[in-house]
Amino acid sequence: MPITSEQLKKVVPKCRDVPGWTAALNKAMDRFEINSIQRIAAFLAQLAHESGEFERLRDSLNYSAERLTKVWPNRFPTVAAAEPFARNEQKLGNKVYANRLGNGAEASGDGFRYRGRGLIQLTGRANYRDTGKAIGVDLEAKPDLLLEPETSALAAAQFWSSRGLNALADSNVGDDDDEDFVTSTKRINGGTVGLAERKKYWASARAALNGA
Image (tube, rainbow, N blue to C red; front, side):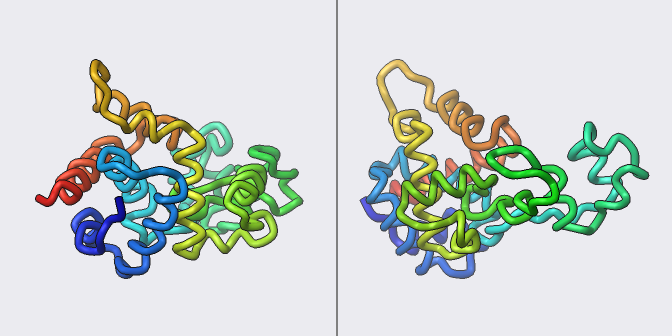
């Protein structure tokens, strides 16, 4: 079932290009069988939180030294240790994402090159490569394609489908929809950061899709 621009606007009122995102999402959701009210509502809720209502498609690494000690306390145990990386996105990205998620060493530049992008903040060379192959786009060679609505929507829908999140979103007799949403959040985020806000978007999406 396709969504309308009016429905999407109710979920992400801050979005500046609702018609463009509506078209991109409908194409992606159709391809990856995000095709019921339950699936679409959960999908839109998670994306709305992850992307700041489709307005933040690139991970910002512009942190103060004090903030770095809180975000990465093991890497930056003191403000002095964090100072060389404060307000330096490239240097910070190359350090904190080095030798992870298919990235090379710090000197390779992979950490910054493959920092979080897209609606679901895809991160790491391996994820760019694998997701790109799945949707037929060379994201490894052209990571900034994830800043474009059509590619970003496809990547998010493929991620969603590949993690079994369609099945989790379905309402089945005897299951707990709220707990399933929490599980979906963990599969996307690795934890439950922003859960309260995600649930607000979820409620808004269900209302919009049901004609409220």
